[in-house]
Length: 385
Image 1 (tube, rainbow, N blue to C red):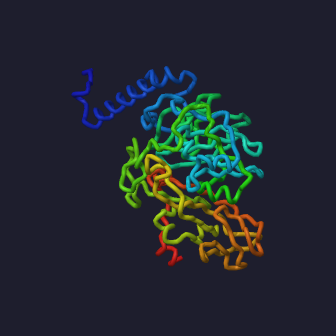
Image 2 (cartoon, one colour; image 1 turned 90 degrees about the vertical axis):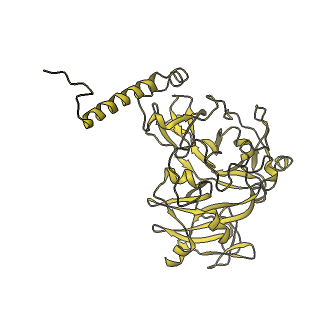
């Protein structure tokens, strides 16, 4: 029998063979590459949910961006000595305990391993995606501690846990490589707000201290000009969804399997939006005057952007509708006044709380990369509903 080689095969069979060889060679190289095996001897690369080729080096080595493992906190009054009132902080409230994590610190560390209200949590911020997300650190009964791999996928931070050296996608909380591939961290509600608003709402709450154990130029932005509309995301090779500018900030809300995003351009025109996603009545609150941490080199010199959050509109089995009156948020049904944190601060419903919706503020390119079927809110669509 005549031996068949690549030259005597049909083009289809020859292409299939070459593809199989290439895939095998790539897979073997990925497994043997010292950048993977040498640096990560405990990571099980055979167990994964993504293609390894999608993961690229972001520049720093493993833990080159060091997580904060022993966070210290100070009173809001002390933090006010170095924190501009307009600067953004991650506000996280859990079981009666409230803390603020300034982005001027998080952008140099990206992860804070903390315990709040008795729950071990990871406070995370990826500057490249403008993604601030809080996770419960417990998986299968074990408490995990997280660090940075120095790698990115879709321009987003890839974290790892120190217990198993599994890799995790920060944007989704999903384990993507290693023993925990396929697992998902539980997300906990948090929001980005101006420090002055946080301090006014929670005067007794604590703020992450600059005493982190690391010498970093807190208050300066190493990503100067990164969030300018029209710029391109760093190390993002996917096609950019043409429906929105890549660096447009959006508030994404998930409910009943549906995803809707609210571009900040729409929030500038409508600081209060009553909407319905699936069968869930929701409201979006936004407040102007917060500083971007990704604009000027000195954060205090940056341009203003809104803070935004989404809540469910039902309170005590009653659906409320909200509006802006003389720079105040009130509900039309009772005339009660509400703050951006979803708390009734005056009126008949004083003391009531709106339940946070599953939401977060991110860059449009990142949100749409991980949620390509998102609906995009527009005032015209709202009028038709």
